[in-house]
Image (cartoon, rainbow, N blue to C red):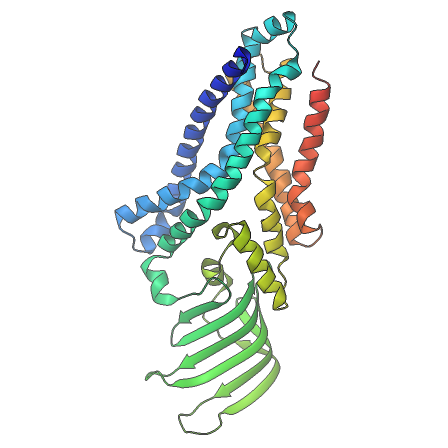
Length: 358
């Protein structure tokens, strides 16, 4: 490796590490104040609270790595521009595009590493963090099978849901059983789907059965639409339903296959599936964008201005990325396009900036 490439690589990882530590510390500080009430309500011990935030660190790393990459590149080339090192290299006949080679290699390596890291470690640790957050109160109120179906235990009742659509607050294939004081089945309700509106559940194509403890057929009634007093909210379901963050790429793909095979809508999970491949690629994109900004001579003022450029660029990307995902969740864009749209736009911007570097 040429000396200049080794120099850029060494400087990048130095500032990349500093930024990572700073951002993780800030993120955890905010998360502590935001989550402390929930952890206390869950009756966690101090050591469990510490473990909760330790388990959150891999997720934090996976989310902030592209930002740290961008800031690291901006700082490195910003300081080189401020110290006239870029001018000296150009005077020696070194092309600015030549300086991009180590940065692009770093971006590729970090993109691949972030994908592997997010697949291997994040689903495990975030799942354990969610379990701790549910705490003792969560274990008393509900149990769940998170792979295919959702089971919930509530006051004198058990509810089974085949599929929950979190974006629309709709449950499909729902069965709820209510027991009396001696744990004898007193009522059972089966419905094709349920919709949560105005603080209550409305079941559609429902069958209600009443049991009086006498052997024989129960009293049954059928309803096209019926309001049901079910002591569960969509927030309860979101806590127990398996999120895309808790599944790696292959498990999420299999989950989508199972959901669609049962005839349910898996659009949101499809968007999340493609996002698992789109987001790690941001490391490479941010390397190119950051290098192009810095090498165009816009950051001579030093590290403070470099950070400002990085924060603005990261904010614009994250806003666009979230907006495109929302369009995918709303079925306005195809899932793959929704996940990759922000990347495609920034790739075009980065390519244009690189072509005009000299």
